[in-house]
Every structure is written in C-alpha cells, then in structure tokens.
Length: 191
Ligand SMILES: CC(C)(COP(=O)(O)OP(=O)(O)OC[C@H]1O[C@@H](n2cnc3c(N)ncnc32)[C@H](O)[C@@H]1OP(=O)(O)O)[C@@H](O)C(=O)NCCC(=O)NCCS
Picture 1 (cartoon, protein in one colour):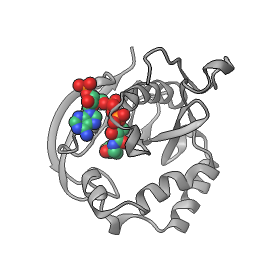
Picture 2: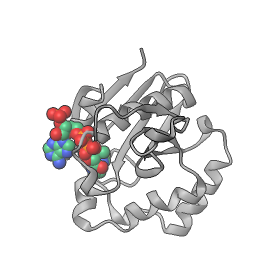
Picture 3: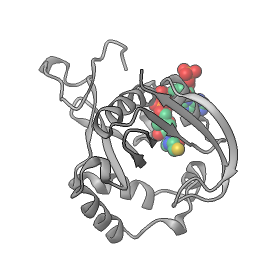
Picture 4: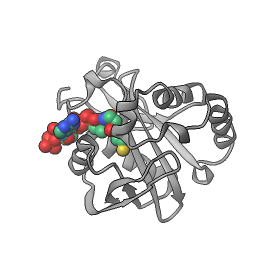
C-alpha cells in the first residue's frame, strides 16, 4: 500500500484513475452481511481462539441474517450493530462493526481485514481511523472504545497506530459471542 493512496469516508473516489488504490468505507448492505457472518462461522478453532470468540455462542446463519434484516430496517443510531465495509478501490478488504451504540456518547468498534495476506501492511490502522470518523459522523458518537483480546497483538497495535489511547487491561467476558479472557480497553475521542 502506498502512502499516496487517497482516503475518504462514505463517498467513493471521484477520480477514476485513483480507484484501485483509494481507501474508503461505507455501510454494509444486507446482501453483504454474509461476509461478516461466514467470516465467523467459517473460522477455524485457532482463529476463534485468537479473536476470543466462543463458537458455541455464535448464532446460526439464518438467525444472524434475520437479525441483520431487522436491524437494517432501523435508523443507524438505533441499531444493535452498525457494520461498514472497508474498500480498496471497489474491492472489499475488511469490515468494522459498531455496537453498544449510545448516540451523543459512545460506541464500541470492531476491526477485521479479511485476507490474511493483506494484514500487517498498514491497512487496518488506516481503516480504523476512517471507521472512527465515520461512526462519529453517522452515529453521532464523539467517543469510541475498542476491546480486543489482550494477547491478540495485531488489533492492539493497530488501534494505537490509529490514534486510540490505551486505558486498561482486565479479565472478563467482553461481549455476547466471547469467552472469558484478558481484554484491553482503548479509547478514541473526536477532536
Ligand atoms: C487487527 C487487524 C484489523 C489490524 O490490521 P492490519 O492491517 O494487520 O494492521 P496494520 O498493518 O495497520 O498494523 C498496525 C500495527 O500493528 C502491527 N501488527 C499488525 N499485525 C501484527 C502481528 N500479527 N504481530 C505483531 N504486530 C502486528 C504492525 O506492525 C503495526 O505496528 P506499528 O504501528 O509499530 O507500525 C488485522 O490484523 C486483522 O484483521 N487481524 C485478524 C482479526 C483480528 O484479530 N481482529 C481483532 C478482533 S478484536
């Protein structure tokens, strides 16, 4: 990834010659929801362990899709989860989800680059920054928290690189699909 790539939120790149390299984010559509659902349901035990996710707590594909359908009918600020896709030109290379949305206050951000071959190249940290700005604009949340598993190095490093500030490390169950684990909390505040 060249550092010359243009960045933006919401709007696709307006210069066609830059389309291949532009980084941008937009809301995930219902048709794209299987991207996130199958990412978790199709993951290996080792990968779920890295993420801190308990397979037994994942909804079935049908139930998860139905949940998306219900949620997408609501305004972004009223949803249980609000997901966006990360794009390099026209190609989706990752996604982020905001949950525990409290308009005017805060939400929690999740981060995933889909293809392992695209990780650790500087993309994740740049997309996290774009995602935080997008959630700030669309959900009206001036503060974002993120709580990766403490021993999962990549998100911890990427959050710091994206401008999140480390707050603390504690052991608990951080979310409805997670098992008990050591969790770090990071915060981003809009300027
Ligand atoms: C987490 C994730 C989105 C980060 O995106 P990324 O594109 O890999 O991260 P970046 O390339 O922007 O790296 C940011 C920093 O993290 C470091 N880093 C990334 N992956 C790393 C790894 N596996 N081990 C050590 N350091 C790593 C980079 O060296 C960089 O460090 P720097 O700031 O010192 O330069 C991506 O790695 C991913 O999707 N991982 C699997 C899913 C996951 O764990 N999600 C988090 C669930 S809570």
